[in-house]
Length: 65
Image 1 (cartoon, rainbow, N blue to C red):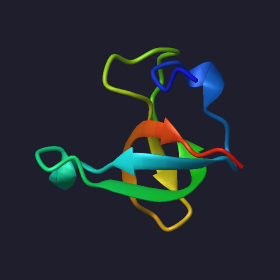
Image 2: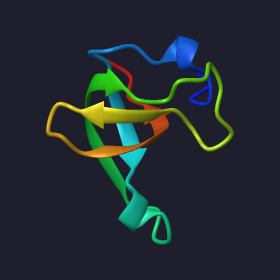
Image 3: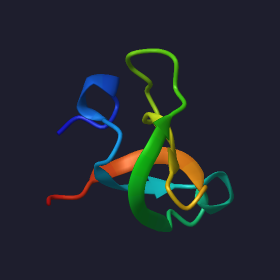
């Protein structure tokens, strides 16, 4: 699934994000989307979201449920 399109990201799905401080290492954080922060429908670096834990980052993968 394309993680650069907001149409594929919905509140409540499990995703893996890269946080700003982890961009150099590429470390991913897994969680459930609580809010979509990107205003545009597409973004070249991924859609920015807030997880239920409060962490913010860009979606890199959608976790299969």
